[in-house]
Amino acid sequence: MEIKEAEFITSSVMENQCPKPLLPEYAFIGRSNVGKSLLVNMLTNNRKLAKVSGSPGKTITMNHFLINKAWYLVDLPGYGFARRSKTERKKWEKMVRHYILTRSNLMSLFLLVDLRLEPQKIDMEFIEWLAMSQIPFVITFTKADKLNKINIEKNLAVYKRILLESWEELPPYIITSAVAGVGKKELLQYIEKTNGLFSVSGFPL
Ligand code: GDP
Image 1 (tube, rainbow, N blue to C red):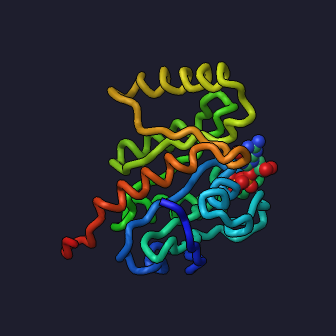
Image 2: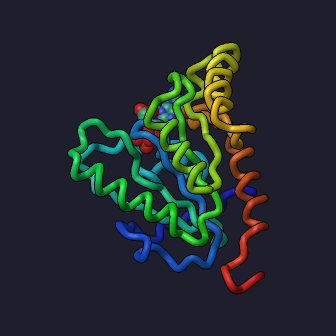
């Protein structure tokens, strides 16, 4: 699949403000600065779709983009922004968790993780919560261009070891670099394949 059209639809702060759940949807999430905006822009061939490097002052919203008139890409606000107030963090938590748990057309969540860093507690806890909540997700490693092949394998092995301590099998994962254009094909292939599984609840296609 190639993204030919990416149209901004709306920014929401509540699940009930989101577009009607009539198309398959994929949400992107991760710690602030993980490279989410750049990745979304790489996928959509648009350098400005998602704003790169959000400031702590920016409004916390969930942004819907309609892709090829066929599916939604959602840019969720990043977590783990140290400079955000406790009230803001609580707001994030309530909004995003509620969205993830109730959005009926959410096919999969792309959880972005910086491959350069050792596993971060906040990411591992989020993974644990997704698994417990039975939300399908793909671990999307970012910034692979910053590592050589040996270090990619080395860092992956650390994640795999930790994940296999609590999982019987590994969740799906994709290695990406927005800078080097790595992982785009795999990610879009995953979405294309998963789109085929979509049916509006109560209205099988
Ligand atoms: P966000 O806060 O998750 O949306 O992160 P951004 O997309 O704004 O990126 C945060 C910083 O990481 C910026 O300085 C980007 O230039 C950098 N960055 C993002 N993706 C990559 C990547 O694939 N490779 C490299 N080397 N840097 C990246």
